[in-house]
Amino acid sequence: MSEVSIDFKMHPHRRKNILTGEWLLVSPQRTQRPWQGKVESLPGDRRPSFDPACYLCPGNKRAGDKVNPKYTSCFSFTNDFSALEIDTPLREFNVADLLVAKSQSGICRVICFSPRHDLTLPQLSVNEIDDVIELWCDEFKSLAANNQIRYILFFENKGEIMGCSNPHPHGQIWASSDIPVEPFKETIQQKKYFESTGRSLIGDYLKLELERKERIVISNEHFVVLVPFWAIWPFEVMLISRRQVQTLVQFSAEEKSALADILKRITTRYDNIFKTSFPYSAGMHQSPVNDGDHPEWHWHMHFLPPLLRSATVKKFMVGYEMLGNPQRDITAEWAAEALRNLSEIHYTEAS
Image (cartoon, rainbow, N blue to C red; front, side, top):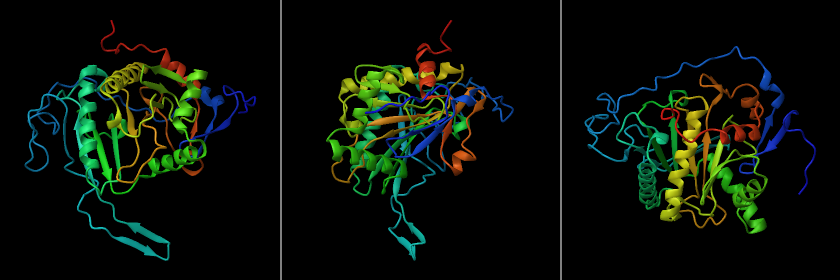
């Protein structure tokens, strides 16, 4: 192991994402630049507990003639406008290896976190989040039982700024017949490391981060939240299980309760950064299914929030980021410290 004298607080430098093999540029000296660009409008935080026009609220009509049951906990259903369809015929298209395509089948599901139209994850109780986790597990088992499925991706787009089309708090599951690009890259990197060392890449990385403590945000007995060394988004974090498991369904009851606890704590800190319902895209990365053993895989979640300087100024991925490689101004270490210093009492409940 070697360390060189890079001043991470002052000097532009590149950092490697060990999960993808890709690089990003960090430019800490740019944090002082003035901003005269796009300023987002804030969506209203006040929503009714029930909205008769919402297609996700209990008892309401969805697309066509479908009607939601009057559910009292979390609730899941097949997306009425699915991006994937399980009965898509298997076809391949190839012209001189220059025009290449293949069909993709799958299943898209929606999970409403609560019957309440106005409550996001940080505003739910730990027990209510525990119910969501149990439903995730049930969905995973059901989808994995279909041998057409090779990858199951759980994710949430929170907030208008992230393209969320309905304010009722909900997440999605896309189960596909092929492994998507990002999990595929992570599979390759983890497999290389495991074949070389016999150990988990993420497990060894987590051990190092726990020793250094520079980028740790919060932790409990079973999970750690940290800002990854290679984070791209300003307040990006990874949620990592201390025990290496390949999928969500391998967690014990105690671990699932600990996961509910830490999900509430990190999302509450997010809302407290700018005293707003903090937008993000979050997703769960776990091993492929119906694809043989994957002893290299280590379960984790990514939280990718866009806000940069305030509730109305976000980071854009344009120019150099789109044509060169990702770039950030504030360092991962600064972001971790900022998140560490936040309260875990939701700002709407604080006196």
